[in-house]
Image (cartoon, rainbow, N blue to C red):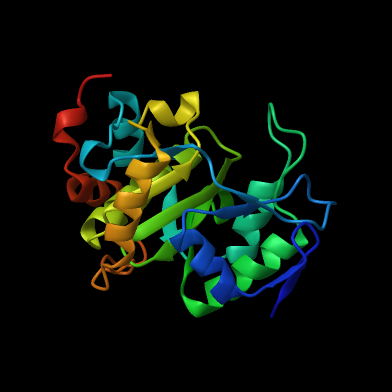
Length: 229
């Protein structure tokens, strides 16, 4: 599967997309209806340092309470639909059809993953991202129930730490992500972290079972230093 990029007149394959991520570049679209892709390379890059991931006290209680069943890689299309759905403060999405097709192919190749939060059998929140070596590029998250995407993020970090990942890329930093310890670093500093991470062939997204308890997720990320809000 290949996608034609109108903005650069290039044919983008999943392999080309992975090479772009390895160079610190990622695609976005103006809207779901716009078929063009634009390459983004921010001067300042958002990351969440995995060794300093902060879990607020109230969220830790929610994670332990098992309000959601959290699984991975079960419903790729459902997660993409959730991420593309309108939300407060966001009437349109940047996830267009070419991006959906490319990510679907990466999912089949084992380079794209979902974290899914379910309640009474229904998908109510989650996130997806791209894996390359020991780097995970968080693409988007959604929540139809309070805290669902936050719980999904906690489980993602648990999985990344257990699997030996060293870089969680958030692309940009939002007020929401800063509560978890997200920060901005320069493009040059990011390049150093990225090069080191993608060379790690030992990172393993499936180091933990596909579904673990909230208590086990918190134990995996060792959130003992995050007791204070």
